[in-house]
Image (tube, one colour):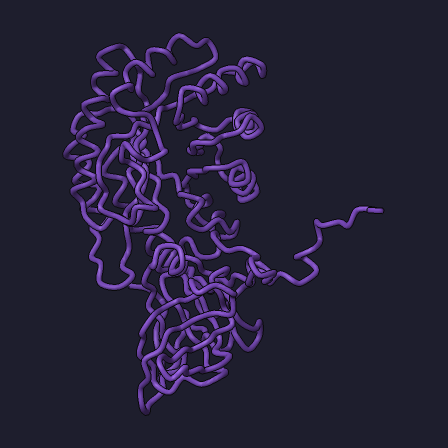
Length: 417
């Protein structure tokens, strides 16, 4: 359920017509429903309370500081993967004691920034990273709390580009070396072993991969506890999927109850890192038809948004529902919805059916609240689009549209001979 609904044949976000936003700020743009965000937050938050838990929102899914601020004011923390994301969450008012830092390539500068910000812990993904953290913490005269991200070699049954828990993936430490890694970490004077981490992938639509991973990690957890390690935090990552087309992912309460039954007896805190499941269906990408084109072989609806704005279809061949903002009657055509970027991969949907699409018509591409704007770029020197947040009958620009001047602001022509 979400707050994008048709009223008298016109698409609204909550109580605001999409056409009204487009007329005031132009196209293309992202629009998010605060009502949907609140509802998804409440469902996940209440479900998580059956355990002693901390919820750390996965910032990479949607990192606008207005949205982050809503989560942080509501009591959640953050799962970050870069120094830039740490900067964002600080600006958005996060409680740094609820920040976990994941990622395979943490730099010295990022690690120092995180230690000085007093984050909860690092999810360490390699032994060289561990030794670098130890050295930096020692130089700063501090101790760094860590968990190891353990790779359980579980197939999540998702797209290979967003699978992270197989032994062939770059993420985490092979579970065969987990105990030895903890023992080595225990010998470092600037490291405080605090937790155990696991994340197997994104957009999971079945409960069984989660169960398999948690069962494996539970066995490791108790091996570590029996060896005297005080594992205060068990970070189970995120990955719960959403409905883009016909998927039927498990409800958060089903997910939580299943995990609780497996972990029966664990006394520490369980960390969850939801992202897509909270923000994915809260957002839509709105674009305008520029041209209709027929090659005699195929029809194309050419819009003013491009793959630089929403790359998921090009990157993953991901499905997003596409609708005309104003419903029309009449003959139907089958067409590909494509953008202006000079790549054949620049498409939003193939062989979609529409009623008489015309230049000037608005199109809404749904389920774009996660990995939409956050993955956008300036490819083809296209300014990034604005982000709009709707709250009942009001809307706010939470990120301004970039200008051509913004594209070259950081560039300089040197005095060459």
